[in-house]
Image (cartoon, rainbow, N blue to C red; front, side):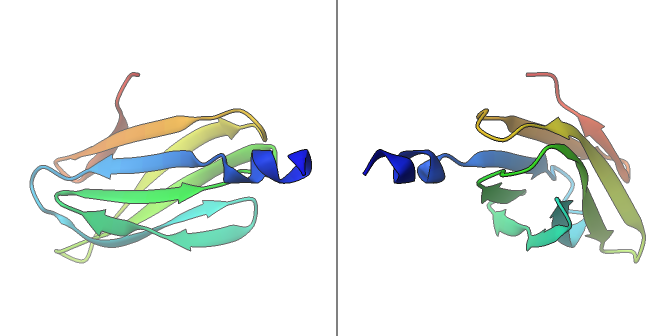
Amino acid sequence: MLAGCGSALRDSFMVEDPQGMIVGGELVLCEAVTPLEKVGEDWHANLHVDCEGSGEILLVLADGREAVCETGYVTPGALQDFLFRLEGGDCVAVPG
């Protein structure tokens, strides 16, 4: 019974989009792609991280440009929240 408890843990990846520049995006992590979901002005992906390594969030902007948010290192079993903000077409990490 306890083996399933850890699977409910979700890591959070969020990009704030105060200027409304993002039209889509995806999280690429552990060779898997997870589409971002728009919630209000922000874009989110929540998933159970089951690998070690780094990833990135690929954003598509309304003017056709792309932006990349580097997630840094992820660790399985550790609840991690990654927060970024799109500023002038560049993705910057927001300190936690």
